[in-house]
Length: 440
Image (cartoon, rainbow, N blue to C red):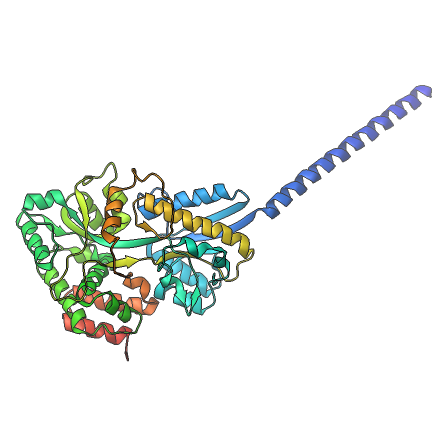
């Protein structure tokens, strides 16, 4: 009996000990779980959408975006940024559909001008005037927020000052005995000289439409001037003027002279860019985002290309210092955003950092007053463009972004009919005015 009692006591003691240990373990587990939940609760999650779908792209805009994104994550370890990148026109479709369903992310990429107008009209974007009173605007280059102001309210911070310029392959020009053009006559003479040597004069991927639009835009800037072009784009002026018709006539002159080759209507932007990068075309009019590709270590034209101001047109109202470009790309905040002040700190850090990284990647000048540090490794083309555009007297931004969605499609429809030879210059500019600025 005594032995049994002893065993019972021992068994009871062991059971009690196990229960105590188990209770302590459960308490520790609960504490760990609570700490994890607390950490998860305090970690701010931000959703972000952009058109930067390829993290391996050598495009300066892509490089700048991903470097800025990583720097922002490092700067704010208590923030989780969930990024979704969608390329090309698919991004525009995605963001428009999400806006209609009121399912936009916390931060999303957009363009100034007409593209953002429907989002603002639908109260989908948060005005940032009050948030920006913290001194942020003092750090930004004057005038670079113009395309993000609607009805007197600011909706986005600028990233960079983008420009389109004429890229010239010096080696091919030397082979053809052509002069680097500064005037329209010198440009057409270079076209003839390159053709005589069996070299395609200009690479153009009209299949994607917007590269064809770029040529129309810069020619209009040279014939009509940026003030008139901007007035037409903002429905304060007309496309149906002698100056716009002259620009279209100059465009037709290049098309008829086979300056863009036989198949430019069926050539994509990527194919046209590859044509220029492989040394098979003498010129390309394009944005600074191609700088990285041109100067890449594997590029066949590295060191052979220079950017120049687009040639002036005699009698035109535009000067060589008026540029196609400006500041028009940004990220904006969802109007339904929670934790506005915390997200604002992350947002403005990201935008400023991207501005710096895009510049260092050789894709446009910074729209922020940054200390870029050592620029010895900056893409030489970017430095040259910065010097060329330092005396700019005016900018006119991308037409497909300045116009709203329906007007953009109308513009592209009329433009592609014209470049295909289905309408005359006068018919084209009249149609453009009737479809986009009827009644102006």
